[in-house]
Amino acid sequence: MEINTLFVILISTIFINNYVLSQMLGLCPFLGVSKKLDSAIGMGLAVIFVMGLSSFFTFIIYKYVLVPFDITYLTTIAFILIIAGFVQFVEMVIEKVSPVLYYSLGIFLPLITTNCAVLGVTVLNIESGFVNSNMGLLMAVVQGVGGGIGFTLALILMAGIRERLEVADIPEHMKGLPITFIVAGLMAMAFLGFSGMKI
Amino acid sequence: MPQKKSLAPELVLSSAPHVKAGQSITSIMWMVVLALMPATLYSVYLYGIHALLVICVAIIAAVASEALYLFLMKKPVTILDGSAVITGLLLAMNVPPDVPLWTVGIGSAFAIIIAKQLFGGLGFNIFNPALAGRAFLMASWPVYMTTKWHTFTPTNVLSQGITNITDMPEQAFDVVTQATPLGALKEVPKLLSDLHVLPDMLHNLLFSKEMLKSLFVGNVGGCIGETSALLLILGGLFLLYKRIITWHVPAMYIGTVVIFMYCYYSLSGFPYPVEATVYHVFSGGLMLGAFFMATDMVTSPVTWKGMLIFGAGCGILTCVIRLWGGYPEGVSYSILLMNTAVPLIDRYTKPRIFGTRA
Image (cartoon, rainbow over all chains, first blue to last red; front, side, top):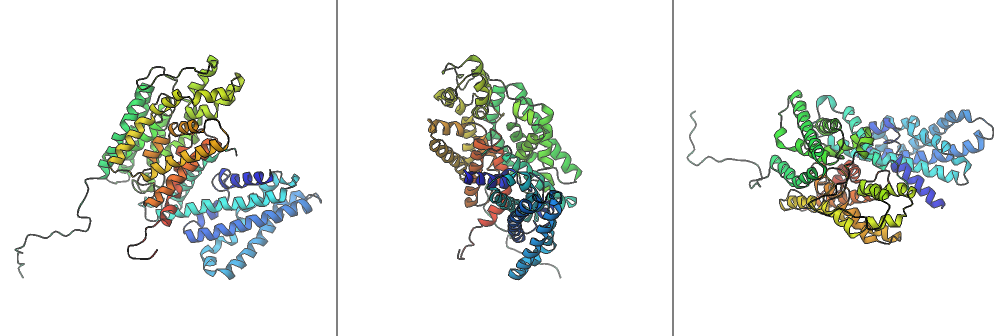
């Protein structure tokens, strides 16, 4: 039963409620880091990691600090603080482990801090009512990881398409971001096929 | 210094290939139109004059918007190559027969301008234009796109009408036969429970031999182009014979649907797994999608390995959307979704360069 619930959460965050393509969250890195496939994969992995762990910690902070002390109105600011701390940590790790990736991600790595998809997933964890469930923590982490995987999927697909569009005969005024927005819109329409799915 | 005139016959140098097949974009495109003709004409016969108008409006709007765009962009106007005609025709085959005409017109214009020309025109589009147009219409006017079905016609050249063999109440029988085949499978059970019809009775009717035969030759409701599996297969075989498409995508696509559906129905303990599988294969837009839309040269992978992956992906997504999704039919969305993955598939299925190790 519990495994089933977790599976449903995972599938629905990856495909049905994909953070980028159905909820339109996290568009800045989606458009900014999708130029090259390699950096898209790196960015995706970083986001999966950050989303999973920040889901874990924000959930604990919310349940055991914010709720008992009745200060849930601080949710947003507390979550942003936690996420920012994490991103700094990930940044340091990537800089040590893979300097090449670090430089190709550039400004977008610190920008995960303000990636609305990360804040979105942590807030949605709370709004989905996971707090009242026994399995809440696990569900939150699964939703976080699923959200990250969904983001990575969208990012990688977009990177593949943009690499192909490099050689396309696109009208001058549509080159770069404009055509990327159109691709994003068409991808979102394709992902409508998953809408209303019941597992 | 005066140039000496060479005594040898003039040597013309050109790059390979030196032996060419007679195929050109124009001939391929018109061949595809020809292959679609039997199914199109049959649909016009089945659904009447409004279907013909829908097809005409779709084609005219597609060609006109292509011409207008190319003219405004000061590019050579290449509307005679038939690619816009195919886009319009395929879009028309993907909409219900009684849809308002202006809807298809807008869909065609969207397909040509947004999904094709802005990407650089023929050869550069990432998404199949006709399917992108359909997805756009689905998102914009879902009511027109899901309710404007033609009412069932009792007379038909290719097959007999379906009779009420399971003694359903008259009202319930009407509900079943007015729905599209896949809609009957997905949405009708809810309606029928009000009329006290058990799901078993519905399944006995839907999976009867008579119904399957009807599906195969095409005496069922649905989009303009998804009626007769038989005529679509004939068109597909013609394209295969002319080597305009290869067998990889259609075979893998339909094969995956067969295997997936059979496994699903037999594992879930359904009494007629074989009939249900056949029902799924011949209903909806699977044949149209597998032979005419998934095989689009621009938006499908280049290598045969890539084509197999592409076909399998389309098949799995189609089954998933049909069985669990919010829509009764998943062919168009599954092909669009796989279109997004084509650049990646191509990237990872590059053929080995001759003489190198893998």
